[in-house]
Length: 103
Image (cartoon, rainbow, N blue to C red):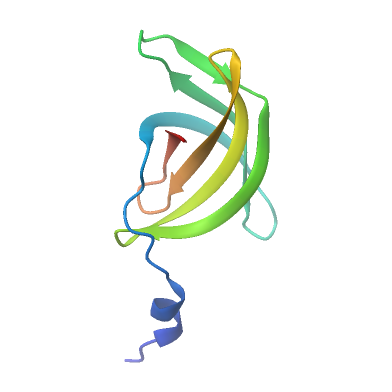
């Protein structure tokens, strides 16, 4: 049995993901190279109203590891509650779930 040390060494630990996190639904486009691009998100507000956000300006995407969990973190600008906000859309590879993290 062989061990690939490169896989372990390439994963930089980023500690704990900080910020207010909300579970979201996300429609995403995947390129032929496997890169994900969020297109539409649905998020529930504090009053239980479901909001659909179609205007997503993708700023950066980066693979990160938080507490041993692999994620893809998308830094985006969206219209959230009538104002433009910079947020992170985080895809957790292990559970295939999305979260919106307010900065």
